[in-house]
Every structure is written in C-alpha cells, then in structure tokens.
Image (cartoon, rainbow over all chains, first blue to last red; front, side):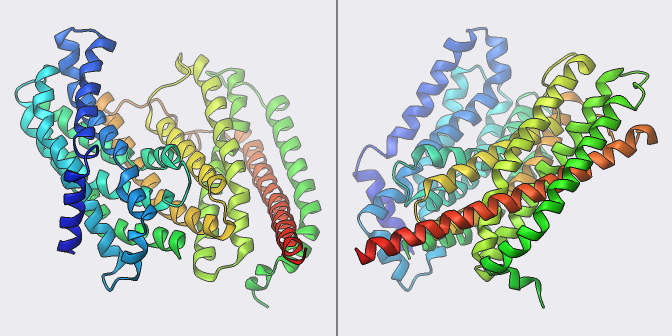
Length: 218
Length: 243
C-alpha cells in the first residue's frame, strides 16, 4: 500500500501537468469572481466562504479524470486488480494520493485566496478546518465517480454529471461551516456532519468504487 | 410458485401482456375521473381560488417521481444479487418515466407557486431536493446511454443507483438544514396532506391511484420494448457470427 501511495505521489509530482493545475484553476476562478460580481468588499466578504468552497470543489473535480484513466490505459489497473492487495485498499490509497496532491494544496492555498476575497479575519481558521474535513470526502466520491466512468470513452463530462450531485451534501455542510465561522456563528453542527460525511465516504465508498471497477475491467 | 419465475423474460412478457390492458384501462379511468372530478366537480379553495386544482397533477407526479426511484433501487438490488435481466431492464425502463414526472412536478409547482407565493422558484428545501432528484435521474440515464456493453451498463447503473440513493437521502436532509440556516426556519412549503378537506382529498387519491397505474403500465410496456431490443441485438450478434 505504501509503495502504491509513493508511486502515485511520485507520478503526480514528476509527470508534470497534474500537480499544480488544480491550484492554478482555483486561483484563476477566485480571481474571476470579483470581475463577475463587482469589487464591492462587503459583497465579496459575504460570498467569500461559498466561493472558496465552490472553487475548491471544482478544482477537485477537474483533476479527477486523471485519477484512474491513465492507469486504466497503460494496464496498471489490471495489475492492481490481480494483485494480492484488495482492490478496495488500492482505490482507497489512490483516493488518498489524490487528496494529498489536490485536496491538501487547496486547503493550504485557500486562506491566501481568502485575502483576495476580503474574507473576515474570524473566518480563516474555520475555512481551513472545514476544507480539511471536507476535501477527503470530495476525493473519495471522485474516486468512485472515476471508477464508474473509467471504461467510457470521453467520459469526462459524464463523470462531472454523475459526481456533482453526489457533492451536494459535502458542499452544503462545508460551505455552511465556513460561512458560519466567518460571521462568528456556532459552527459545530455543520462541522460534525461534514466530518461524518468524510468518514462515511472513506469507510464505504472504496467498496462501491472497487465493485464498479471490477465490472469494467473483468 | 414464486415471484422469481417472472425473472424468465417469456413468463414475464406473458404476464405483462395479460396485466397491461387492465392497467392501461384502470389508469385511464383513474386519471380521467380523478382529474375530471377534481377540475369540474370540486369547489374553489376559499384562499387559493381555482389554483388549488393544480394539486391533482402536482401531487401524483411528485409521488411517482419519488417512488419510481425507489422502484429502480429495488430493481437494481435484485439485479446485483440475483442477476435477473428483466429486473435491470425494468429499472432502465422506469428512469425516463421518473424523470418526466419530476419535471411535471417541478413545472406544475412553479405554475402554482407564481400566483400563490409570488415567485416561480424559491430555494425551499422541498423544491431544492426535487431539483437534486432531477439531476440524479439525468446522471443515471446518461450512464445507461454511455456504456456500450449492456451487462456492464446494468452493473454500473445499479451501483450508481445504490450510492446515489444514499447521497440523495443525505442531500434531502442537508438541504433542510441549509435552508433553515438561511431563512431562520421560515419555509414556504404547505403540508398539503394534513390540512386538506375531504372535498379535495377524494379526487386526489383517485388521481394518485390513476398515476400509479399509469406508471405501472408504462414500465411494463417499456420493459417489454427493452426485452425486444435485447433480443434483436442477440439475433444480430448470432447473424454476424454465422456469416
């Protein structure tokens, strides 16, 4: 498992094109928001938590098609499927690697982009915490979506259609926690529910993803 | 004698052919009488005026939209556990019907909401969860269309239906939470079934029964079509092999 994790991380760092792309997309999206809604700082600071969450979610979605597609093309997935390591574990590791290369940088970058959107000072900590708790769910749900569509030619758009509705609860609780944190309200409830979704996704979705993948590559 | 003998397409088609005329006829009677009664023979509501009559389409459509998904979930489970092709095809056949019913529910709701609430659309929990259900139907149908091998398509859509059901349910409650968080508990939705007088209730039940039978008839008919499609495909493959 560790070898697989290291291999995935190494590929993401060295193969180029994949690692920084999500971050750059996140940056551009956040920069475009003031252009579309106007530069009034009061408006920006009230929508900042939601925009940052939406941006992180879309950046995550954008990098999903390379989560399994490249390994499917060069046959790595066939090897993994016949390896002694259960496919469920392999997919959980791949989801984790995706989180390290995509989710974690987004979490780290979010406060800096929050400055651009005039996020209230109280909001920074809660934004980071909510993203930290929520992005693992985004990665695992995305891993399931990628497993579902990996055998389909030009499945990228279809995967967005399948994955985005699944992101709804995560987005609601995550953005709500960040929004409440920014205006100084009690954040515990959405934060706990968000953590629950993440843990549930981590525990159960590898099985669903492995089932879907076995159906494609049997 | 068990229900599983209808997993055989021939037996299923025979039963379906016998049931369908009754289902169509009963559906027609239920809808015509229910809607006719509701539209022409009930008084106007004292506050809502004649717009109350939208209820006879709106509620049955919403009822079918939700139950069609539950039926697809059960059919998907049967396919995953027992590998009966009829079951997978029934789930496939039900999806577009459910999608159309969702759209009918949303559109009639908007038409009703405009005079009553003064807006076509509000981000009310009920409305929002229906919109999310609509997206789930779209994704499900799109996945069926995208996968070429029919068995793989049935497998993948079944898994999607299972996972989707969990997330749809979670979205339902997440949306409740979110909207209350925004509107401080103020909600536009009327709890229709509880505060409705018998005058409106009786034709409504008839209309719901009619819509349910219509759904049954449509799914049986469409499943038959899917089975015929599958057979022609099998024949074509055999033809290709011999020539």
